[in-house]
Image (tube, rainbow, N blue to C red; front, side, top):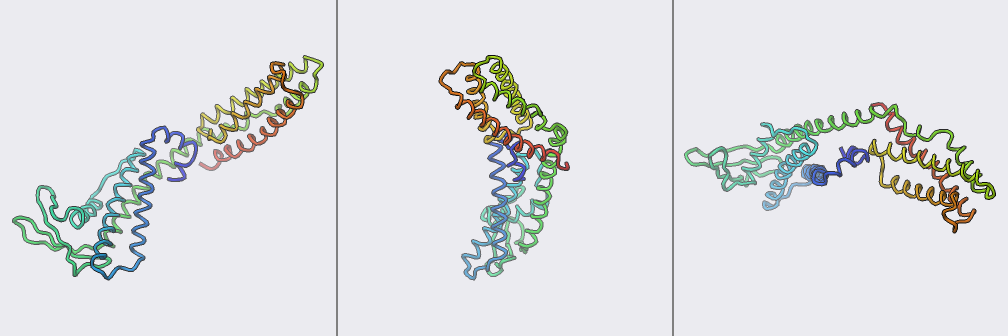
Length: 300
């Protein structure tokens, strides 16, 4: 899931709704945090002090409760149906009765008053005493490992539902463009065009070479507009590529002003430097594009 949301083509869309984006990030982090807390509970020594025993037990059950909410909200953000089934409801009911609202636990119209039996409190279990008006006292043996196994099984199912949806969305996106390589926009004649631009720079005496050089430069400029649009269409225009493209278009603009004599302050040496930049940067763009295309040609 993290790989999906951190992939530019999907992150671009997700960031358009910041509330939803923050809900996804918060839910993922919270799921990870609660999982970490549960792992530490299982591997750490259980305290001998009664006060800390309560803190540990409270924390364990609260972690399960928070984890359920995190997965529910993550599912909601990705528009995947999440239902608190009977298994998860039982976990929540035990949490509510034991540590959530023990002193006044209202369940389907009946109010219960609950007590954790201190002498039974251990790392993996405790006994809960429940009292209510008109009913006899009830003793419930709470098996924390069983509760945990139940919860993790259900949480895993929910994550698989979300994961399956995201994998399919990725497959469909790459399938759509896998035969339309962006690198094909950079036609083989660009090398010839660069050479003609160079002739236009060096041939100060003839306006014909300069005019032809301008035409070649404008053709390259058009190619890069097509390149930018292709990246936008696929949501592959990262802020880094976008910055480089802006620099590139600026260099083309400056070089064009020299060839058309609109900028009399530029020297031939200046023009050669700008030409060197756009020719070398073109190689960078081609290699970057090949990497993007390779992603789309991977098995989907």
